[in-house]
Image 1 (cartoon, rainbow, N blue to C red):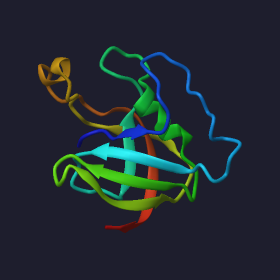
Image 2: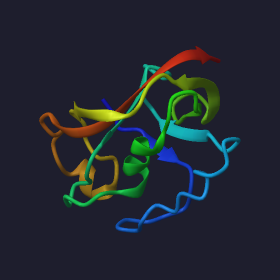
Image 3: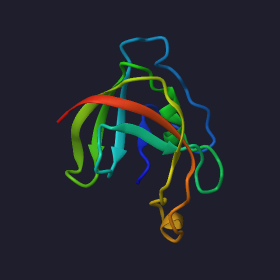
Length: 126
């Protein structure tokens, strides 16, 4: 399984999230960048990167709320936006088995189950 990258605001490793959208209920849109085959099922990302630090795009999974719209960017079939879903519930702690895709990560084997953030999605539409 491959982790989602979720984009909403700019940031970098170790940077605090600027939650500018929190006070504007019309700003509840997210973009998932993935190459998973089960697009629209859930958002799922490790809690920390390979160095054990929070990574901004993984951490953003914690920021989604029920009813938020998630656009799905598929790196395999496009690339481009292939559909959208809605967040069904609050994000929660979960587990993931995955392999990093960066230069460093490709040199490593896939991880065993590790801590992850997850949010359930529903209503996928191409």
